[in-house]
Each structure stands twice: as C-alpha cells, then as structure tokens.
Length: 179
Ligand code: IMP
Image (cartoon, rainbow, N blue to C red; front, side, top):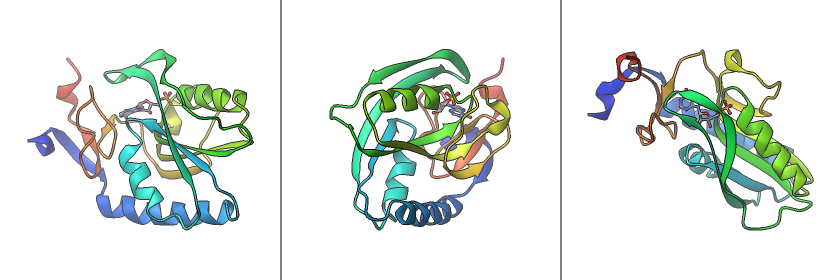
C-alpha cells in the first residue's frame, strides 16, 4: 500500500485546495487584462497545475516543458532540458509552475531559457519552497507552502518516479531511501 510508505502527512488535500484558491485569486488580480502562458514543468507540477488553474478567473494558455536534475533524493547538479517548448513565447507573460524550489538550480536555468526566448516577463508559482536548501539566490513570486528540509512526496512529487499520485504532501519513511 502506498500510504504505508508515508511517515507523516505534511499538507492535506484540503489545505492544498484552499491555498490554490488563494494563489489563483492573487494571480488573477496581478494578471488582470493579460493572457499569461502558464508553463508546467513535467512531471511534478501536474497535480498542482491542474488544481490551481481551476480557480483562475483570467484567460490563460497552457504549455509544458520537461527538465531533469534529480536521481533518487539527491540533486545531480546539472539541469538538462528534456522537452523544450514547441511554440514561441516571444513578448509573452510567462508563469512557470513548479512542484518545489529546492536548490534553485532548475528555476534559474528555466528562467534564463525563457528570457532568452524573448518572454516579456517570467514569474514562478511553486507549490512548495525549501528555503534552507537554497544554493542559488532565487525565489518564486507565488509560494504555496514553505517546508522544512525533509524529503517529501505526493501531489506530484516523486521518489524514483513513484508516489506522485498521492493526494497530499507527505514525508517518505527514511528507511525507504537511506541504507
Ligand atoms: P532544484 O533545482 O534543486 O530547486 O530542484 C527542483 C526539483 O527537485 C523539483 O522540481 C523536484 O523535482 C526535485 N525535488 C527537490 N526536493 C524534493 C523533495 O523533497 N521531494 C521530491 N522531489 C524533490
């Protein structure tokens, strides 16, 4: 059973929904009169993006990119673009959707890329933020929840590609990833 691998639930489904409503209101106010291109970073952002966009009251367009940086629970240091955008974002107002900002390397790389493609503005909405792990001085404009330095899974976040489908954010039992 998936749930048996979870040490504790950190953020419940209800808390995530409530926070998504607040963030969507804030984003809708900030982008009033604009049509932002919302770019989900595959695969971790999918559940959060799906929840968040339900509550946006503005028009928007959806796109996806895939980048890789992690294997298991540790950063490999290098960020690679696995799937690039297949349309132009020149002069567009872009909002990146992330599952978590950890070291900040992924965001830095993706932001740089989007500006180099001619985006007018690039902001970031992230479900989670782990500020204690930051290496690059970067932060998301919209943050769902700040969390301590624990390896989390669920609501899009994975451990070796599993647990993304959990409807909450939880802490993985340490014996499952530490020898
Ligand atoms: P950063 O480039 O170090 O900020 O890493 C961002 C990416 O690392 C996220 O998009 C996640 O895929 C992954 N990541 C960082 N911390 C965790 C975690 O606690 N659980 C699962 N994935 C994580």
